[in-house]
Length: 285
Length: 328
Image: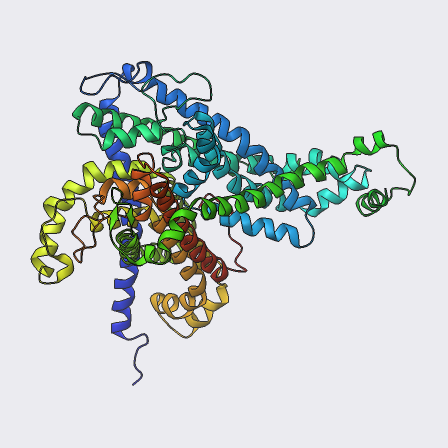
């Protein structure tokens, strides 16, 4: 009489362990909905028009908004993009198209190193670089901190998407008599454009929520900040300061700000991924 | 001139070796494109070198005065100019390791489900959601930590743990909400997406023949996963854990908001503590005196060095793995 294989205990282990893995996945995904649910519930309730149009009120008073922080965050992101995107994308083009020898792998290694630097350390770095010589906090310093943090991801994602462009396109471009630069600019980059844009959008969404590097670079401001050389408020730092404060109304506004920030970050993420999923194959153009 | 000619030759397949005028060469743009992109790539190297140089140079006061005592003494007294970093190092290590204890089993379990069991479409949707979780800014985790998780731990979870395991010293003492344990819980949630997302990629990359061979011997699905797929993917999965560890060590905002910020070493996980990143975040803008600032920058240097080493280990472990480019 032959025994059945697998034996019963193995079948039980099979079912139990596989269900456990399913449970793990469910747990992780449910955390997301938990977070979303709470933020929508607490945030949407706390949101009002004043939040978008008014300045913060002095400590202890009820009301006010975060108009200056919203504008401040946008200024910081604008400056960060102006630094991070060109340097990152051009560096990525170098690695994918022009780099030869030992230097590119050094750059790649340093990029990953920079990407792994804790954001608070990046804050210290920019503090010693800009705030210390200037003797005051500024939007400029905050933007530079975020900009430097954007470079590694912009660079590596640009490189990745350029490398995914088939070599036949490069050969085709050159066979028509175009120079290397012309081929890259007119054939390769357009073919990888969707991917590059996706990478940039994800990059911006990531630094939009960064708080630690802003604490001692752009600092904070209860009023409008004029120009780039003054401390400026930003949404993430406001959330932090308001959340750890003892005032009920500030907690409400922290929730509202969290809701606004997360909505922005998620919409950018979803939009970016839809852009890349509708990417046309370069060969079919 | 000579280098220009070689560039044209290697680049343009059929370009004649004639001398081009400067304008013509500029129009072709190869040298310009090379220089501009090269400068961008070079800036990465410069930034990294400058970063290390700054941290090193600006922590000189504290490094010279305290030397190695900085790392193993535990008095942090800015008024007396006494700076010992042990409580922060302890807090950082304890919270990071505890968060790994919570996140690794769940993360790997979820990754196995997504890679081996779930139909590819379901798996892609779920993975997308898990990657969204990774995109949640850390200050928002802190916000939820303070207002949702702390009360939850305080009223439900910690009393249960203390009832069952209360005899263990690590679970003793009064629980006020802010603690190593709370910080670890938030950290675990924050790093789990990294573990899931990378481990799933590693598992999917395991060759199908590996599964088929064992399946053909009549093994159950779990046996195939555990004995044939998992060992094959082990290196990459351990790499993902190291990557998550580096994240946990450097995480600032969420931890600062729930750990309590008390520079003391406590055996109990339910006691408030402090981490390196949190003390920098809290005290940097208030630091008066060069030595104080210098000590905080040295903390930054320590954090930088540790995360660099762990990231390097992760990189070595994942060497040769073609990682998808993403924000993770």
